[in-house]
Length: 115
Length: 115
Image (cartoon, rainbow over all chains, first blue to last red; front, side, top):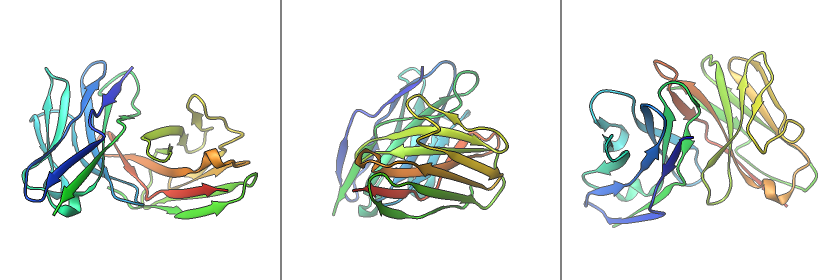
């Protein structure tokens, strides 16, 4: 079975500071990894994904994530946070082949960026 | 990506009634998915809808409660039947896109409140 852990329910950061939202996963074989963002009263927006290749993946709105196979992690990062980044962030994983092609989502991490 | 719309965006319904949610995509897609996001929770997959076949329901969800239609490659509906307050959730449709249909993209969601 595949699973995702987002160990922090909430992350607080000051505007202009770097941010990290943590995600670890468990899946059989190679993973496909995803980050989504949900603004209040909105659906999920795709941010970025890791399928293969470079471990550092760049996505929308200046976000990036680093795939670390040995630590089974895929942490979301941004060098300089904006107040408008405040939202709910979901990490998701699915297997690259075999098993379930349906992604499993983490519980979500609320990011609050303070002015 | 694709443009995915849902109707209605929100509704308040009485216990025992039914609500049909529509999902429209601006391109043809093979797989469409329906998720539920209960307050403060992550996403739970209700069912997968393929055009021309019966929907595949996840454990804990049944067709009598959540009938799904998929009449063509750009449209699907989810009905929430005989509603109770426990059905109050955000309902999200999603589609698979990407070079290998490896990424899910979500509609804006339907916020349902059952009184």
